[in-house]
Image 1 (cartoon, helix red, strand yellow):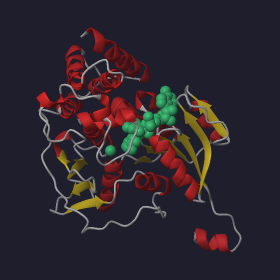
Image 2: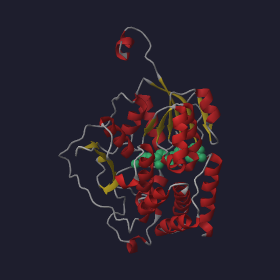
Image 3: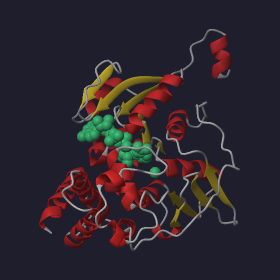
Image 4: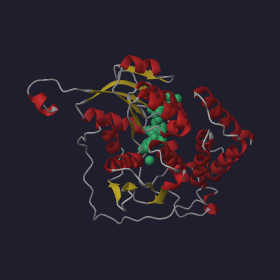
Length: 359
Ligand code: NAD
Ligand code: MG
């Protein structure tokens, strides 16, 4: 009997218990909308970094390690929408426990890479990306084994500018993203293309595919979210208006699809254009590939140094181009030895953060 039929006959529809981490953020608030609109989703726990969230869910927590909260909440799905490396404990908890992980927090997967995949192996649960490009690729990859992947990038507010033109840009200018409305950190990452760099590494781990088979193209209108190429010459693309409620809903209802308020795409509305990224001006993309190829704790250090540099840029303490320079010098300082456990990973993260100001 289908769920709908069961409901008509007075049986209860099985609810999916969702724990939402980072509930007060950009993704968190959109996830609350999705959960609110879908009677089959039940919010059982919610966390935030600092903002009080009393009453939002039966179990709530502000700051700290969410493991004990998650044990008590016993969710079916953990939606990790925390910001930055601070999302690591939730990612590892879900993977270790075989609880479906709907992952927006790309930084934890980039930093923990192999350790996260080993935890998933032990836990045996699902890892479903919420990042729009990876959700798109994940959906296309339902149709066969990917030969190569294409990630699209809007190019951010500074697309087409030269390095010289970026010397004096302000945080306010960098925060004016052309297509997506997001939290401050990821918006700066989109302006430097570090976001796409993190996403290349994220795709490498999610789809266990070598870096040379992950391509990035600039696509200013953010309508095509990702393309999977197959060995027979077919390429399958995922299209839609840029709205995170679509990948959030997909991750929370997989393998089903639920209704959302997002309209169907009008293909006649505008051109679909694609360009090569300018990796000389937007050096963070090239540095991410280098870090990814080197492996070990290079991706962790790339992420850590970027988090520190972006925070400094947002506070007006460094210039826009300094973000890439600082990250590059940190990558030049470390040995990048692989982390054998989470303690070693946290050490690598902390060392990279410290090196931003000494190197
Ligand atoms: P945001 O800054 O708007 O929100 C972050 C959330 O995390 C807030 O609820 C905050 O309270 C919480 N948080 C911060 N530090 C924390 C800590 N130490 N412990 C627990 N919670 C903490 O960020 P966002 O834009 O919603 O992004 C969240 C994650 O989703 C990031 O990893 C980002 O890369 C990813 N992502 C976001 C978008 C988007 O459209 N915003 C798209 C794709 C991926
Ligand atoms: Mg993305």
